[in-house]
Image (cartoon, rainbow, N blue to C red):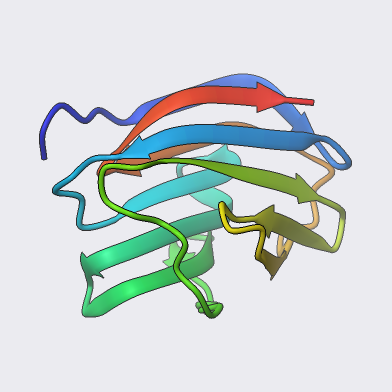
Length: 137
């Protein structure tokens, strides 16, 4: 991967009802990247993993959560609005019940908020992506 580094954001409180806006750029040789939201690397409420060609998947968005040291059940919505070498924006809001993710093509993913927390303060962005902006409104 060229010029990519993981971005960790800690102690930036993301509360239910707020919107997290992530803007980034998919590097040309990306196999996949991930947006992770939770309270620690061991407890991820949301792992959103757009896969260009990784883990046996092609052009698939895989969502999951990581709790108690293991992955939970995967959620694979239709559609794949990410392209190599292109900028994107993703909007994420959540309630006690679910995360609502608005993708670059305005399609939506609804993913259960399995831990049910009202606030998360750990984010990790990893893989073939350059994060250009992180904003909470």
